[in-house]
Length: 409
Image (cartoon, rainbow, N blue to C red; front, top):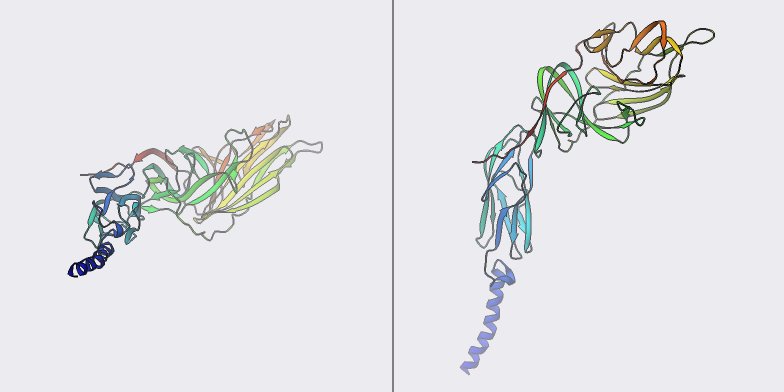
């Protein structure tokens, strides 16, 4: 009888004991498996991150958080979750896991942080592990592995663009080539407000290309900088910052004499263009008015753009038909008076307003008569300054590429 009671007791007790152990063990039904609960290791990191065992040598930036996607990997061997925390706010989640598997963990270093930061992983069973982050603060936009450093020398406001092919434009005029093209521009330790504007060719097989703003095409990234002598502009290939549109008025009409004198039986007639098409484009920083106009012996492609800095500009491109006609007056762009040559640019001064022009001679008279221009003329780039403070396009003294290198002990 006693033997039967013992057997009955064991039949009841042993399954209950197994259930209790399975319920309270870290791995549930895997309670009797051997080995660690989880494993923490270093994941995929950029080439500028140095790794030594479970220590990562990272960077932080003064501009915005520096993200390291998948920098730490947690491998779980049981259907459970481990708690995650850090001493600098580098992890956004409080737990990792749920089922056995591999869980990459993103790290985000707060802006301006420097020093040591522990990322800790724990479990109620007593298991724990950690990764050490050694963080160095540098003047660099986060996430970019390289940058272009452009050294400029100039005065006043300059509108600078970089195309996707690296072409560097100043007030729409191509001036140099950048080894890095991107949407983030940093000047004087500030991230600039940047616009994105597509451009397309208005006619094929033209050298230099005849381009104009459009709804689609090759994008340029543009920003305003104010120069006071020699300064450096940094260009990073990084996602554009969200930018609300500034309150910018439309550009004023381009009041200028444009055309050539043509001979007729009753005397010379000035061949002025007539607008055929006009489109407005609005970016975060400018309002652009693109127009196409036609005259008897040429077609004119032009766009004007207003800015929030007190200046405005224009670009003109003439395409003349092949003709044997003679003329005495060629006016590619003449707001009034006679142009004066200043270095490699032309200027018109009308009261307090100065028109700065880069390109072919904007106005001339022929005596005796000369031939009407033929074919595509060189682009004319205009900056209109009613402030009297602008001093022309800046010099680009140097452009170099810098690559972010890892740091360590």
